[in-house]
Structures are given as structure tokens and as C-alpha cells.
Image 1: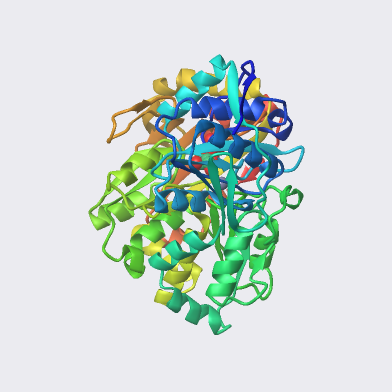
Image 2: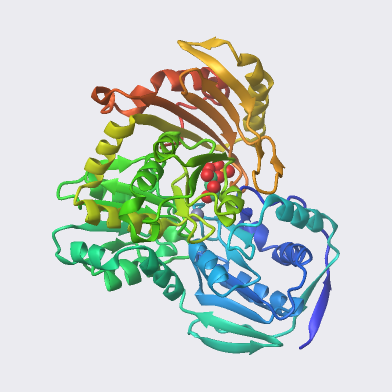
Length: 544
Ligand code: G1P
Ligand code: ZN
């Protein structure tokens, strides 16, 4: 095998964000751009000779080209085997599952998650380590450092590998195994959930559901698991073919971008259960007939009901949530007598807690839940969890949720996103807020008294690493909270996120619209930040 050493110079800004490096497709298409980043990554990895690397992506535009480059560079690096999904497809949780199952050295995921795809959309690359989870900050920091000093990359001079069919190929000294993207993942799901019970419910045709794959990677997974194995009616899965541009939409399962599903679930003859997943299959949105489950509530409900699910019947070691996620799950943990950890935003912070066996379930308000079965959040896993729960309790999504509120109280919660902002204005708003946040401690805002005003920082309880600047936080005396964060997953413009939360114990008040229940919090957030006057906007782009 001939290995070419190609001379290159650094690109600025190859810094991995909340979840890998994400840029416009056109940025990735520049000569050497992808190669530089991959070499910077490979230069941080030791002892890879003969080892296995998992590669897959969400099928977005540029996926196929990038995979061929990765295979050639993996050959040059001396990996022994590459496992790659057929057509280059693997969902993010499936990559995590496959790394763990085959004890691979690590994996590379090509995705920009929920960001738009196509030639004008985003592309992304993320490295996952041997535990199946996203590389921690100390690794991504090293990668970034290498991108700034890079002068050459190594690539094997070998032909492209055909990815259309399952099979084994030799690429120089490297064995490329093209695998079924679904099989290993489906087996793992079957080991956790009562497939017979779910199949009984779905097979009768009385209980109906709709799953929106949003033209992204979960299409093949949902067809195989929900329709083929569990017997849901054909047509249950909509938008089930992965498209390079996701059909022009935002593959983000929220009330704004999953509009087709939301309309179906709010329509006449709505199915009993609705769900959607995102570009790379790690997010989930759960809907009942005319009913939406806030992701934070979903996490709390899963934790409170884990004993109904075969894979979690033995109890939960602990739970964790990201800081902006509502405190609903904290109440469940308190009642179960288990620990609840509060981590910064991003799945990578759950990895150590999961590896150390300190938690079993974890989640984020951003439509992400997961467990110790893999080291990524997992969209279809959450859908199957809910289906198993509904089948076990014989109750609707709405009934289960309302009963949960009755038992624990309701944490009203909403996130306001201001997308597509001018980066400098977004930064200025955050800087101004940061300048005054600590001095608000002890002061009154409206009828609330601020107990804590700070910039959230975190010390990992396992490896004691510190992460600073993880979001501006106002915690009020009664536990209500307002949080301000700058998104770390965008590609060019900036997104500001405001998170508002408030607890209500009185069941008579659980029916309020969250926007009404939280109106005073929203007003405080808007006034403190000056968001509307400073941007001239009428309101947020997306409300969850
Ligand atoms: C967003 C979410 C965060 C999630 C990440 C990756 O990051 O807020 O919870 O882990 O996407 O899916 P952000 O854009 O806020 O940095
Ligand atoms: Zn995702």
C-alpha cells in the first residue's frame, strides 16, 4: 500500500463545539479541510495499529465523499479494520452500540445532528472513544491544538470502497467491513424492552402510532424495528427514507420543525402515539393524542417508571440531567432515594458517570434521553421505552404524564431560541449578562428573590476535571430558574437560548399553558437581556 504524505497548512476555527466540529458543507469541501481535522484527530490517538475503527454518518450531503477519505486515512494510520454502515449510514446511538459491542478503538460520526443539510447546509464530524461516547474535552482540546500546528497528512493511495452492499473488502492493509446499520442496534433494543408486549399492543391495530424520521437516518431503523419486528401498521413510519438534504427541512424533532407530525397528532383521528427523531437519530420528541411531553418531563417519567421495563427492572443506580434541563427528574430521584447529578450541556459529560456505574438514566431538555446501554442519547430507545411503558400500564401518554404531575408536581418549563443572530450582538448580550449576573444574588426581580446568580461550572466527580463558563444561571428562592446560554452547535451565525422553569405543586394549576405559567419569568429574561430591543425581533425563533 502506498501512503501519500500531503503538505498542508492550518485552517482557523477547527474547534470542536458542544458536539464535534460543525461547519457549512462548502467549508468542509475546501481542499485539505476534512483531511486536516482527521489527521489532527489521528495524531492524538496512540496504539491504533491493527485496531478497529467504526465509521458512519446520518446520510447528509457530503457523507459519502467524506467516508471514502476517512477509510483511506484510517488505512494510512494503520488501523486493522473499519466497520462502516451500508451506504455509509449509521445513527449516532448505533455507532456507540457498535463501538462497545465489537470493542473498537473508537468511532467517527459524520453528522451535524439536527442542523439543515444539503449543499448549502451543515456538515459535521465527531470522534467517539472506546466507551462509545463523545471524546471528552481534554481530547477535543488536543485535536484543536493539533489543527493549529498541522503541516502534513497521511492518506493511502487506494481506490474507493463500494458501500452499497454488505461485504468485506481489502483496502491496502485495512479490512473494510460494510455492515447492516440496523442489526446490532435492533438486538440491543430487544435485550432491553419487552418486544412481545409491544408487538401485542401494536399488532392488534387498536393502538396506532406515527413515527416521523424526518427524511434522516432513523428511517431504516424505524422501518426495521417498529414495522417489521414489532408489527406496527405499514405507513406508521413517515419520511422514512434518508435524503442528503433531509427533504429541505430542519431534521430537528421539536414543535416547530416537526410540523407534519405535530399536525397529525393534533388533527382529527390522531394516532395514540407520535414520535420523531433528528438527523443522526439521537434526539426524540414524544407526543400523545393532542398532547406534547416536554423532554424534561419525559426524562422524569422514564425514571419514575423504569421498574416497568425489563432492562431497568433491577433499579436505577442514579440519574443525571444537564444544568438547563428542568428539575422534574430531581424530584423522582429524591423519592427513589438515588443521586441526581447536574452536568453542563452536552452528552460528553454523562460518559464518566455512566462508566463509573453512578447513573443509569440521563437526559437533556433538548429532546435527548438515554441510559447506560450506550454512551450517546438515543431517540428510538426513548420511543421504545414509552411504547413499553404504555403497553405495560395500559394508559395513554397524556394519562401517564398527568398522573406524574399529580404525584410529583409540575415543573413548568420552556426554552426560547433566538436563531440566526449576528455573532457579535449575541456575544455582547451574553457579556453584559455575565457582567451583572453575580451581583444579582440576593436582589429581587419582580416577586422573586435571586438565591444564586452565577456562570455555571462543573467538577466531574470521577476525574475531577473542571469545565467553566457553562451557562449563566439565576436560581430563585423557590427553585424557579432562568438560564442564558450561547449555543455551541451552530456553524456560522449564533443562537441564544433562554431557559425558564418554575414549580407548581397545585394540581388545579397544572393545566396552564407553560407560556402563560412562565410569563413573568419570560418577562424578566427578556428585560435583563434586552433581547427584543437590541435585536429588533418580535420574539424567539423556536419555542419549546
Ligand atoms: C444542543 C443542545 C444540547 C445537546 C447538543 C447536541 O447544544 O442544547 O443539549 O447536547 O445540542 O445535540 P447547543 O446548541 O445548545 O450547544
Ligand atoms: Zn442529533
